[in-house]
Structure formats: structure tokens, C-alpha cells
Image 1 (tube, rainbow, N blue to C red):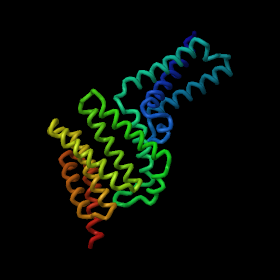
Image 2 (cartoon, one colour; image 1 turned 90 degrees about the vertical axis):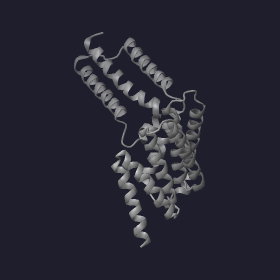
Image 3 (spheres, rainbow, N blue to C red; image 1 turned 45 degrees about the vertical axis):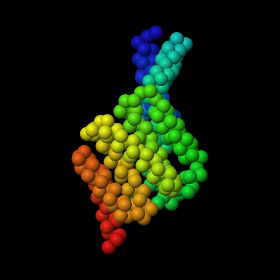
Image 4 (tube, rainbow, N blue to C red; image 1 turned 30 degrees about the vertical axis):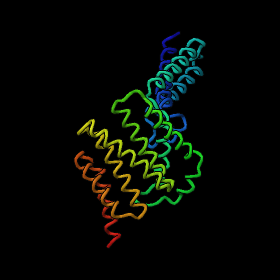
Length: 261
């Protein structure tokens, strides 16, 4: 193999690795749904396209053949090996969570407005990929519950799974189910808070759960409960220095107060 072969194969391998590491974490369809786009996967695509383009030019002008059986086998083999290693090292339920959460966030971008019931919620409830997202998130929660790893991160993953599932139910206008999931996450967070007092990640996750419950109440017209929840979430965000969370809660409180006057 010449230096040109090594450069070409290395570029293709780097591009493949950037793509398959993200593919292993999220799934191929979910990579296309991510907003903003997955930078690592996009970089991998660009590297691969540039390598193929330059290899094609070199072949046309000089007869350079970038591939041979050996180099192709090595690149493909290493790519598959990286995919297997990434999947093997992922925490229990993480892949299912990533797939479901990516779909939920994609639908929320174009359909969700805080404090308002979703007009297409009933249609989303009957949408096959949405029902599949519910199954994926429930499976993720189940695997995390059964995991022998009792670390804070695994327990937080379980909590966030309940929060995300509650948010999906909320977009489906399945209010009782949404409230049940978020209240479950709050109960679990209270336990984690006693185990890890003062932990910022636990507090940040609790703030989001309390905000979610307040927003559900807001969308259902329960404005007093909503304001109470927004203020509780706001206080936690202030203690965390989360300006974005504070601004969102304040804006929604003002909206309710202006609607009541």
C-alpha cells in the first residue's frame, strides 16, 4: 500500500467511526431527527464524502485505486468492532432511552407550546412511532430499574425516563398518565436528594420535574397550581444560576397573571 492508500483509508475509517459511534448510541433514523444536527455524525459524513471525492479525482487523473481487498476488509472490520464496543459499554436502557427521547424532542419542536394543550395530541396518541416511543421509554426505565449498577447516573437516567415519558403523554393529551409519570420522578428524586444532599444534578432534574408538573396544570387550566409549581421551579433555578429556566418560569407566570386581569 502507498501513502495515498493509507491517507484515504484513514480518512474513511475516521469518518466511519464518527458516524457509527453515534449510530450505536441513537439509531440511524434518530440521527436524522436530531435538532440541532449531530455534529459528530455530520463531521463523519463530510470527511467520508471529501475522501471519496478526492479519491475519485486521483483515480481519474492518475489511475490511483484507493481500495483493495485488504484495506476494505480492515476498514469495515474496525468500523464494526467500534460499533460493537460502543453498544457493549452503554448503560442498561440507554439506547432505548436515546431513541425515544430523540423522537419526543423532535415532535416537541414543531408541536409543543408551554401552557397550551396540543391541538394534534389525539393524533399523536394514535401515531405508530409515538406508541413505539412509549414502549421504548418504558423498556428503558425497566432495564434501568433492574440494573445492578446503583450509581447516581443510572438512577438519574431512570428518573429522566419517567420525566420524558410524562412529557410524551402530555403531548398526547393523556394528562393523568403524564402526571403519574412526573410525580413518580419527583418521588424518586426526593429519595436521591436524601442520598446526595446538595447535588446540583439532582436539583436540576428536580427543577425540571416540578416545572413539568406546573406546565401540565397550566395547560389544563389549573392556574393556581401552575403558578405555585412555576415559582418552586424558579427558586431552584435561581439557586443553580440557571437564567434560562428562571426566564421561562417568569414568562409563564406573567402570562397567567395577565390572563387573570
